[in-house]
View 1: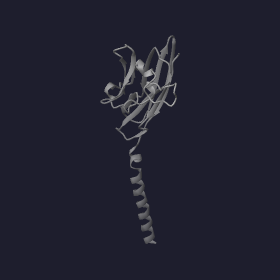
View 2 (view 1 turned 60 degrees about the horizontal axis):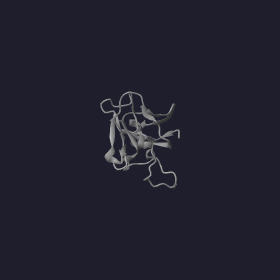
View 3 (view 1 turned 135 degrees about the horizontal axis):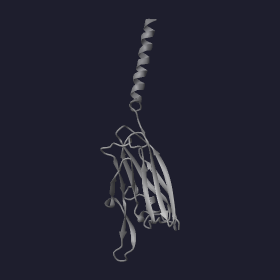
Amino acid sequence: MEPEYTIVPHNRTPEIAPGDTIEIDLYLSGGGIPDENRLYLSYNKGLLDHQNTGEIRTYVKKGTDRATGEIHPVSGEEFEQSDQIAIPGTHLGFVETLFYEDVHANSTLDDVPPLVAERDHDGHSPAEIRMYTGDYSISIILNYSFEDVIKQDRQDITVHVTSWVERHRRKLEVIGLFGIIATIGILATSI
C-alpha cells in the first residue's frame, strides 16, 4: 500500500508571554509504511533564543521480540529521545514503527486499530516540540517516500507573543477608568 500521511499538530501554547516556551504536540494520520521519512521544522532564525533553542522529543522506538524476532513499536517515557533544535531549521527521521498499527490500543473500529503515530504514549504525543522563542509562524513539513514516489505534507503553526500592553490590559483599563472618573469629578466640582 502506498503511504499517505497528514501532519496533525496541536499547539498547546497559541499565545505566550516573551521568554515563554512554545509547546507543540505532533501526530501523524494516514496509512502505509514509507521507505524513508524526514520531519522538517522551518522558522525564522531570529525566532529562537540562540543560547537555548529548544528540543524535539520522541517517545516511540523500534523493539524486537527476542523469541520471534518480530519488530514492533515500544513507547512511553522510558523510550524518550531528545534532539536539540538547530538554527535556522531542524529535521529528524521517525522510526519505522511509528507508522505501524497499534494493535494494543483501544479502538472503536474493530478492524482498524489506530496507528502508533495517532495516539498518546504515557501521556505524551509521539513527538513534542519545545521552542524558546518569540512571535512567529513555524512550518512543520513531513517528506516521505515509497518506491519512486516522494510525498510531502506541510502544516503551519502561529504563536502570538503578548506585548506588555496586552499582558497589562486590565490594569490599564482600571487606571484609565479611575482617570476618567477623577477628571469628571474635578470638572463637576469646578462648575
